[in-house]
Length: 498
Ligand SMILES: Cc1cc2nc3c(=O)[nH]c(=O)nc-3n(C[C@H](O)[C@H](O)[C@H](O)COP(=O)(O)O)c2cc1C
Ligand SMILES: [Mn+2]
Image 1 (cartoon, rainbow, N blue to C red):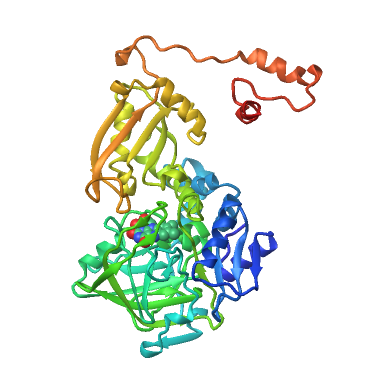
Image 2: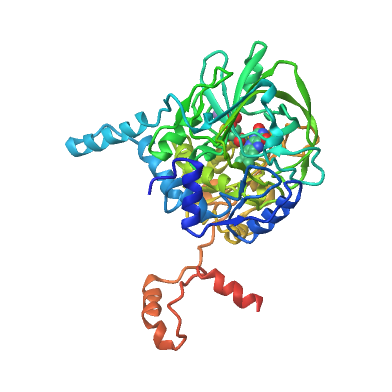
């Protein structure tokens, strides 16, 4: 099924799938909504459309809060299917024969069709408020946590252009409301949006789209290289181009189907103290200077729906945005580090604190090579700890990873301490932005690596496994045959906890 083409279609789809609850009771965007959403997310509950958030406009939240909804958003059965689509293009080879040529052309067409398309108008221009008419108070912007100083716009797609090359960038950066006509712009140190700002000679035009189709919203959070337009990724994943319309007061094109667009500018040297903010790290990120975004126009659908997301101590709704990125970017990561079989970014690690990676090892030092590769790869370079396991280890099974780390590691030999850039939001290092890194090599070692002979793993023979599978019912346990060799961990876990 094709992904929904705008927010309205997305909401209808969620409703049809039993994935949406409309809340007609009046709720306060000051803290109350956060508590409701936090409970809902942690219970694996539905998306919520608050129809009375003390505002004329509805507040839509928890659209991405479960794996199923993330898949519905991308129009796939599993997140790996979205990755496979990208992989088939990345791994294109010169075609052999006519059938392959036709297939190749189709793939090339899917790339060509990903380019955003300019259209003449769209529902986002139903209402155009300019200059003095701009009023952010119209929107039910959430004040998320008790220690936040103000409401924050939390699910925006912020659009800028590189002042030198003209390349577009779309990123998701929270925006603290300063007054009815301005916000802060939380462009962290390593982000593309900040680069555009720093490269500007004076003013930089900025447009902020709110309430998009879910693929385009997701794409704003995707860590693409700076020269790649996130709207292209959105077009590729959607299978149809993002439609853009000219800005009313800025030289930036904006999504024609958005619910709301804020247009305006930032200016060199015009900064304000932003934060603190109850962040996705589970802690308040400290107040720091960030650019002020002056809103020159607010264009919207007349009954615009305002989208939001609540982050906080993981797991929160952003977990599935992160997991989508983890899956979708695996093929691209493998292009540079081909020995990588799989990887996992634990949600509890807030995405920059830990990566578990499985590799096909064929030479000594390869786990350390992979650690350094990760520490040199895009935003993954900010990763604080890397755990490397062998190809047959399931990186998504943290109990198995724990087993390998404790069983296979000689801490003196297999722990690599390094240092380098750290995430803007990492509060642990003594100095902000820079500090220690740890790599743990939990792979099997062998004589070639100077260890004693490595013991064999305990595995039952195929023959006996098949025999027991076949005879299982005969033994009188009733249930379906269980997997052997510890693979039925869940039932074992249940037994141990009894
Ligand atoms: C809900 C959510 C909120 C985010 N808030 C911020 C933020 O305030 N500042 C920031 O720099 N990155 C934030 N990010 C991460 C960026 O969106 C992400 O790193 C993205 O790759 C940035 O785009 P860019 O690489 O084009 O700069 C957020 C991500 C999500 C999912
Ligand atoms: Mn970017």
